[in-house]
Image (cartoon, rainbow, N blue to C red):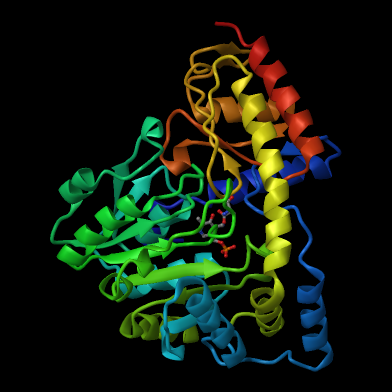
Length: 398
Ligand code: PMP
Ligand code: GLU
């Protein structure tokens, strides 16, 4: 069958693919330690489940307004007002089937052939492929590990062309865990405002921050910046609700209306029951998040310390999200039973096959010298998995 050309530009999500492989191995009875999954291992909070049960019992099981129920859109408006001090009207809020879907609606509403979207690297895997699916060109802005992955405004400025439509800001960042400080955000905002570039602020990890850090949204810098920013967020990460599929976008009315129209002609409303659950999460879920993040913090320190104890591997302490992103340059070039490990993918494959540990290689995030490990898994798994990695790496020959 002759498929649309756009399909040939993309691959399946590599993070989801690695998780599926790990799950398939586990189903065969193999004892796999899975560091690939980008989802909290915590159960969804009880009040959230209770709200979903109540919705089912009350027969709240029919189509809802395509853009989301009023109650949830209001909960989102209230959250943005109390936490960020930003005011939105209902037409500026769109609830979708996960933040990934929010981003996809946005890409479809915004991008066309010849358009460019600036993506700081390392970046979350789906940004580039969603641009490619919509005929646009991802323009990668390299950032450096030794500078904490901060964006250099001069380098950003050099990438701006008349075709630049948007820039992605993902703080805290998946996969690096980096967070942007006020100066960095101001540097980005200044360029975006000057050139009328839309800022896409993916804040899905806003509540997963460590060492007392507070989330800073670029949209709060000034009303002018807010008018040019779309905030993307959702309940997946903060409330351990990845399977419920609720994300949302908040931004300029004309753009959000276009996104809502696309949604009404494609998926219609996100799941009615999940929407009720999301209202509960936003209204009463924050104490749960605080406890979960305290536990992630303990795991973060153990994982990073253990990684740094492996010769050839070095790892920064991430300031947010729940991923370690170790540099494996010192291991590349060593030899395993299957040959020379010359790339993150080769190392990830080796770890999966030989040590039964699933990690995501750096290439789909835009890095040729890192791998990504999620520490949103039990301490026991972290200790076991890191023991296995240390042994497997120790056995490699120079
Ligand atoms: N943005 C980032 C940076 C992510 O890591 C994820 C997780 N897959 C998403 C968006 C999408 O999250 P979801 O679709 O589960 O809401
Ligand atoms: N955000 C998660 C990750 O990066 C989930 C998988 C995905 O949607 O890509 O692993």
